Each structure stands twice: as structure tokens, then as C-alpha cells.
Length: 66
Image 1 (tube, one colour):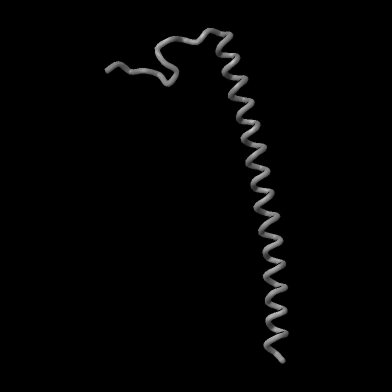
Image 2: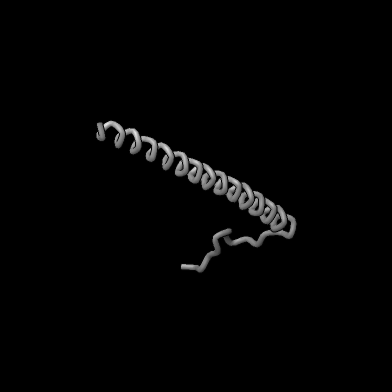
């Protein structure tokens, strides 16, 4: 079996290489933006969940101390 590259048997022209590199860079940037957004949402969610847990614990302590 012949050893094949992931792009197939043909070599890409310089123009195709530039277009592919541009496409790859654009996708990397968009992926990074999405990842940063998801991390920000996770941090915001974890911060708000911590506050509500504390509030519920305080209400529970007040109810049980009566």
C-alpha cells in the first residue's frame, strides 16, 4: 500500500496553499472565540451557582434554628 498524505496524491498549487492557510487561520480564530465565550459562560455560571447555594444554605440555617 502506498504512503499517502492527508491531502491526497496531488500537490497543492501556491494559490491553493494560500487559500487553505487563510481558511485554516480563520477557523482557528473562530474556534478560539467560541472557546473563550464558552469559558466565560462557564465562569459566569459557576459564580452565580455559588451565590445561590450560599443563599439557600442561609435560608435553611434560619429555618432550622427556630
